[in-house]
Image (cartoon, rainbow, N blue to C red):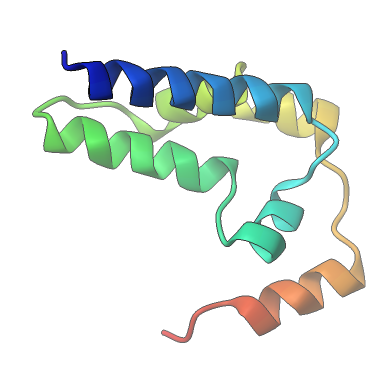
Length: 96
């Protein structure tokens, strides 16, 4: 592993820790402001594993990103999206 790889891995771990500390920040808020969310990170994790010749199930990747099974995180921390958040999400969604 190169120094760059070690640094990038440390940054990823710090990002996960930061998101874990900010459970109050909802995925829809992340999507509306940054264009990605915890689920996106999970999908990127699966894709990166595949690029390296490994198989990681999406739910296992989500557990890594969320720090617990997704269903548990959702039940404990996810709130209902507001009408404003949903409208912003629809406005910012890329065209198919």
